[in-house]
Length: 263
Image (cartoon, rainbow, N blue to C red; front, side, top):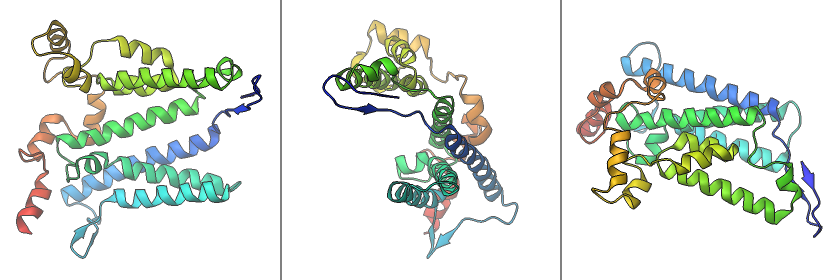
């Protein structure tokens, strides 16, 4: 979509190339599934797969993903290749993104929590990425033709308002709704107006201890409450009790703890 507002500034927003998004999303999902299968086999000691070590240092698969993201991003910006190489870049980018996000919890916590309770956040990040890919695949956009036609002021204000509502939703602990709200602003508005979850940054900052809002939040989201997202996470990361049993009190996985004790 494009428009030329009265001040002569041209604004151009093109819809995503859905075929490339499809290639990228398919590679992302396939790589994530294969990666989780291989890591489970390594963990159980079955099959020919083993951890990669160089000089006694365990090389996590996120390292390969980071290099793939850097390489494909550089190739796209520097060369803008056409068919079929642009499809190859889309696939490699999806592979790199899956390898990197599959260890999201590790690069956030800087510790080997892959199979621990905190490691479940990696699966959360992957599922959020799949939702984003699906929205791009169906052509969802945070702005419409009316916003673009209104000029850069209207466009900037619309995008800023959408992002602000999405940020409030995420700060209230409603990450998925916040992400979806970037593309569907009404979802972000509803999520931003709803009650914050007890442990969320918004609740910690704005809900005073003993306040009515905090009590309402704790009743609405009791400790140990499972949501609709958790059964999907269980498929790839194991159940929350199992993950807790596999980690030590600090949240470190048992294999990591053993390696630390042996070193």
